[in-house]
Length: 405
Image (cartoon, rainbow, N blue to C red; front, side, top):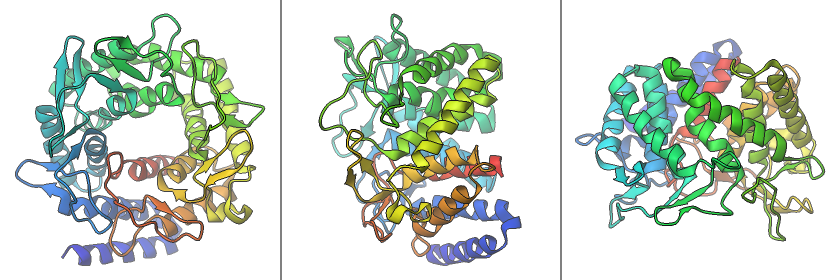
């Protein structure tokens, strides 16, 4: 039955791709095939999804990772607009997360990174990636349901998140927090600037209208710091690591992902919708976002110098050397999000990359999306469900494409 449904969804995707006027149906079918891939990982009695799932959809372990489950909840909550049954599953998975994957210490609540198969629940060192993305599912579920009890729990988690990571002296957030020693010097990164917005507060600001002021000052501060220190105009790459004063830090072994260029550009471009920013701020951020997209499109990162063939996974920013020649699904999702804001200016590139993504990363046979393909666009066989991978980047991209088109 599972494979039959996937085949039907595949033919729906093909049919809609041949009829551009049916973009809504095409994207909805893509959402369906992405979510249905994880059906075998769903625990009906407890309402959660196992996180480690191979390329065929079979569960490989009993581990449940916070980021993977939270991203699954995000996808289910958003997909409830397509199929109400997914909303029910999102609520059940969120209830499981809140019951079993939330810890508490002297600083407040936190997201337990992983449970199952001997994983420890006690947490001493917190990283901002897991603590920010631990919230992305709950925030999207609140946006869909407006459940005030859920919002209260989100507020408690968000307050502790800010308490742990916020630098009240130099601004922004640290990337690591030690329960015994406090904020970890030298841990500031591009992620600690972006993820509190992209994974958490950007969506909360959109949904939690009565409490927007709680998020606006942080979003505003992070954008101002990012505008000043992230983009390296001489290298035409984002800076990825910083000292405690937000000065860029470099080393001989530096590596940058083109996806981070696009992800940062998308954040700058999104700011046009945030009314609490001044007109000048929105203009400056928009111009920087455009400049980054243009510069990245012109870089030597594209296979055979063709946007239609996608881009490499990792580059040495100092030399331009390609370090990893595979292509990553999440990076192409971020590129399409950025281009969706500029589709009138980069129409050809937007369409070419979109065609490439759906033709290459979507597994039309088994469902879901490949995490990576090689230089010749052959799938790299690895789990489609991992610590940080479920349906999130794909469905978040579809959300932005639907809003843009």
